Image (cartoon, rainbow over all chains, first blue to last red; front, side, top):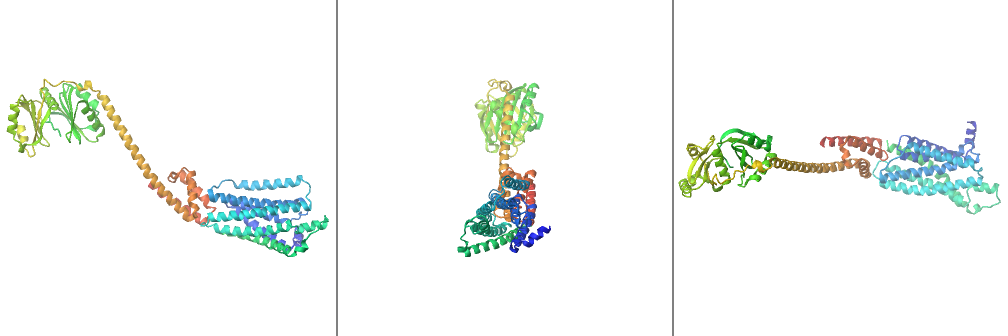
Length: 249
Length: 321
């Protein structure tokens, strides 16, 4: 516990606030999943997993490379679970089919995470470069699925425009726009090797150079977008689930 | 209506709906009955003339004047007995002579029909009968009574009126009827008793088969009518069900939105169509399905209101159907 508080103190304030926001968002979304239909289970679990993926900052064992890598894999599983949930909701809007078991969603998520863990365990300890690659893949999948989810949410909204919950989907679209900016800007930095992880890698391990000095403006802008969009994403997720909970009361 | 004078009554006003023709004919045949049985229906009258248990003559006369004799009249009688809910049978005993005269009359020809007695020159008519040396029968009748005068070769043979079982010699009854208001006459020429064939229709006609055929046809008609009525009722019910389905869609649509219609269609399709709405188990499954879908779309309060409205509508529908 002492180590935990020590870590909290050492953390960047902004990152700490972000983790707390995601923690709240995760708690609200998980609570939302408990009393609701199976479709919401996937969505809620996915957003809760985002908190777990962001929590590496407060994870006292985060210096273990495999655990850090696991955090990023959890993030990937999170957006896939969220997308699966929205796809199910879209199918429901078109076919009105609701089937399946909540327990299967929980179980499947746990199994996928467990298999991811096994994957990391049986493979060599990831280097900082490997961890960065995993993070880059995570960001790419996030960006792609966010764009897809924005479109799905739009279609869902059109289909159920006159029902109580439709406004909740407007809120979800705001969430995905925020997440798109957050992950998109981070991916942008990674692609052009202007991200902090790469800067640390080239500083410590390779003799490669970087052209970051030439693009300070856009790098700083992207970093700011990543920072604030990440914060906004966490806040909007918590707010959205609270709003939907009120709509469905 | 062909009204014969009543002979000595054996049975009167027996409800035909309770009788079977083969049984009636068998009883009269085995009883060596001589006389006639009349079956009175709303559309006409059937006269069966028996002589010593032999069915010697059968005549159907409808109100429109249509006449059938022989097998055709028996088949028509069977058909009327089976299908008619009303109808009465009377059996009158007559003497053999009178029976044969009636038989001859039924086989004969109508010369004058329903002539108003006031308008006819009865004396000229009788003179003609004598001059032509006719074999015939003069029937004098009102709606309730009739009397007959039989002639052989232009000479009166005798009288037959209500209550007689034999050919009478007194004309008083005939004169009384002639004096009643609205009295009419018919004049029939008849074949000589010696000329008419004494065929026993019971031996040449398969009465049981005629009866069974009439029963079968009637049964088929009933089944056809029932089927038509069932289909008509089914059609009415299906129209009513369709209207009810629309009402349900409106209720769900008002609560959930335009997707409500689709949800109702889907739940009805999964539960065997709109007939599930009037079935306890089906309607429970339908409600459960709608509620499950509604949970993804509207608030708990609105779901409760929706379920209440649907339950009320379904209860009303069940009482209507």
